[in-house]
Image 1 (cartoon, rainbow, N blue to C red):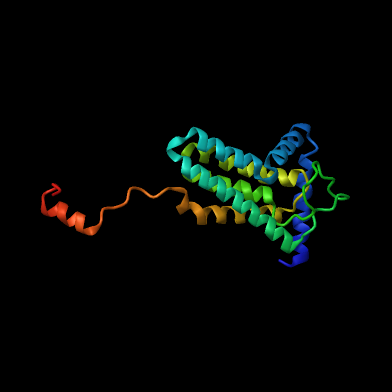
Image 2: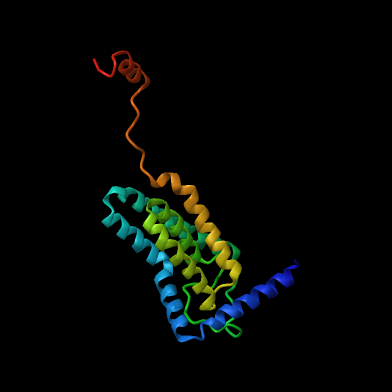
Length: 194
């Protein structure tokens, strides 16, 4: 597919999703998600709440929250390098204001995908809530008209990749294994130390 064909398809998809925002309930939900996802606030609050209520996984929740913040910061760095302008307001009047001028990648999508992966790895209940909430956050960025589909896709990939790379860090190490000589002594003495 040529770039011009791809760009045209992307604009058409954006127009279709942006048109969904003409329905008041859809627009209200998309605006709420946009507001809550600003600077990853919804996901950071969710991670800190998880840390407060799930004492057994507190360290994992805090580390997951740090991964979400790190993914968000990475997306901001990429935006400063790529500097892709947001969709033109004349063609797609946005339903929300944005914190910045650049759109690639979507930082909302980045932090949402990072949260879905990180928090989903910590608790099955979190997975059932975070994944659909992250998907809704991603779609909302198109409905409010402030991102192209490739901005959202790239953001989701960046967030998911960041959290996937950090997954081993989410779980604190278990108790240290005894040194080899202690295991040998245990075997020689039939389980008795001494």
